[in-house]
Length: 211
Image: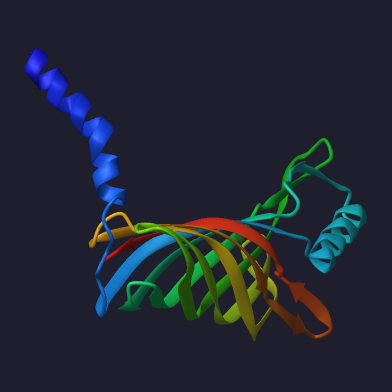
């Protein structure tokens, strides 16, 4: 039993050092993975529309977190060299749905503001801090389809080309796995019959990469 405990303790203490203590030589290899972002934005036209609708129909808000969205994603790509990744990305950003109750009656209307995106991103490990960790910068072009929903029906929608710029820290733990922690800015904006569909904002997130 003592021997098992010692082996387990040794693994906890020294395996992380082994993972991050050797330089990765991997290059020219396909990669895939998943990640997600928490976004901070202010779609003022959407909020103004919902507030006017609520006032006109005697509704009051019961669940609303203004200014937040969550975007899970998946990607495939290619590691050009140990410091450069090229990724084809697909993601779906979902804002907090705002639920309104009709006063003293019951369930009313639900509104949502969502974005489906796909594009190409290039990530570069610009400042290696250790052989297995570095400061990264990333950017690219995204095609965005933005939709405003009311009771699961599309009220406004349109598509446009935007861009993403981000930076963070990359952890290249093994030749099979790496992790990126990122903060960035998305420009995503479209227009539907004069209605501003604005999904631009700051975001924080992670990527988990397998090779």
